Length: 391
Image (cartoon, rainbow, N blue to C red):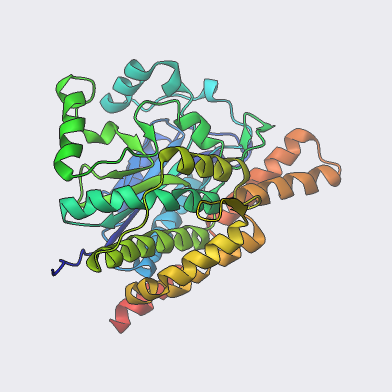
C-alpha cells in the first residue's frame, strides 16, 4: 500500500506580554502601536484576549530554519515598535508579579463573547502560549496521528516551561499557565477518535447545539486546526529564548514525521490511556525537566535527559530528512541548563542574595525576560537568509 507524504510544513504562533519599560508592569498596547505593527507585518500580528497581549504567526514555512528567521523578524519588529512607545515585549507565559484583576479585555466581538460565556474563568486568562502547526493534509492521517502524538506532549511541555510565578508568588509549578487554562471547557489532552468522521460528528453536536460557532473554541493540547490542514500542538508555554522555541518546534515536526513513517510501514505508536499521559502532563507542569517522567514500559520515573536522548535517537532519520537535525539536538541544552522557569527562579534568588527586596527581585526577573526576548535574533535571520539563498 502506498501512502501520500504530507507536506510537514510549519506554522508557529507566539503570544507576548507588553510591559512598561520603567515600571516593568503590564501595559495595554496603544492603538497607534498596534496599527503600526499590523501595517508593517501585514496579517502576521493581531491583538489578543487582553489589551496587554499581542500575538504573531509565521508564514507557512518549509523548514524550522525558515520558521526561525520569520519569528526572529517578527520579534524584532514588535520590539522596535514597542520601544517607540516606552514598552517592551516578553515571550513568557505568565508575568512574574502582575495582577489579572487590573487587566482589560480587547474590545473585539470574539473576546466579548468569551467573557460572556466563560465568566470569571475568562477574566483570569493572563497567560500566553506557543502553538506549532504541522502540515498534514489528509484528514484520516491527521486524526490517526492525533491519537499517537499525545504520548510526547508532556515531554514537549517539560522543555517549554516558563510560568513559575503568579501575582508575585512562586507557585511551585514550572508551568502554572496550564492551571489557569485548564479551567476552560474543551481543554486538556484530546479525546481519541477512530476516524475523521467520528471527530466531525462529535464536534458538530456541540456546534449544532449553539454552544460554539466553530472548532476554534476547542482548545485541546493537540487539535486539528479549523483553518488549516494541520495538526496544532498547543500544550507548550511560550519560550523567552528563540533557540528554545526552535528546538521544541523541531522536535514536534520530527515526532510527527516519525509517526507517519511508522504508519507507512503498517506500524504505530502504542496508544496509552489518558490517565497515564495525564500523570506525565502533571509532572511536566510541576517539575519541568528537573524531576523525570514515567516510562510506561519500564514502570518507573526516568530522568527527562534520558527520555530525551531516546526521542532524539528515535527521530534522527526524520530530523535529517526535514533539515532540522541541529535544532533537534539543541534540545539537550534545555535539559542541561534548565528551562525558563528555572532561570527565572535563579535570577530571583541571586537578586535576593544580593540584598534586593522581593519586589525588586521580581523586577530583575522581568529585566532578564526582556533581554532574552531579543537574544540571537540577528543570527536566526541571517541563517534563514543564507539557507534561502542556498536553495
